[in-house]
Amino acid sequence: MPFLAPPADTERAGLRGFLRQQLDALRHTTFGLTEAQIRASPARSTLTLGGLISHVAFVVDAWALRAECAPDRPAVDPEFDGDMTDKGFDLDTEDTLESLLAALDEASARILAVAEAADLDTVAPVPDAPYFPDDLHGWTVRWILLHVIEEVARHTGHADILREQVDGATAYELVAAAEDMGDLGFVRPWSPSSAQ
Image (cartoon, rainbow, N blue to C red):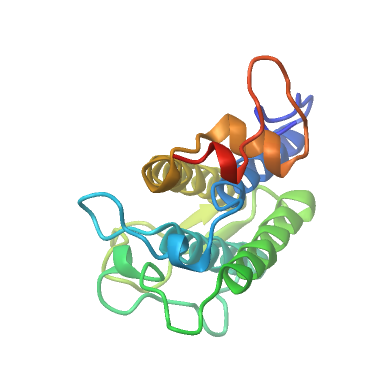
């Protein structure tokens, strides 16, 4: 049940569980949306749900690559051009909800495979980028996984707010609908007819 990460009796199980729960929660924020709705920016910012999905897929994939290559650097690191905060937030005309979710699913599978099998103590070197501290030489795979959980959770919160602004849907009712849970008593699954 994605309302909570599953109980875990090992560090690795905890990392996997929280990664999966946050990635699923982000995915569920787009449940039932139209192509126009994933491009809507209903708040003062220019953020869109599609842009958040795109950005998270890019970031998760980049961190997974660094962890996979540790202790070496990736042959080609997916470095950001210019301001890293903008990477992936702008959608291309050919981006669709289906293509964005496919990219997120691919990145999710990749980072979950890292969480499943990588040596958590292996150190990944810091990429040569102006936004990383000069005196930092590397991160453990453990740190990378924790950072990805933090990154996804932050953007899932953004997505929750945007989704509620788009049509009034909230996280629990979206999860209940996406997971086909039925009426749980404390929450009813979202449906298009319940949208504001």
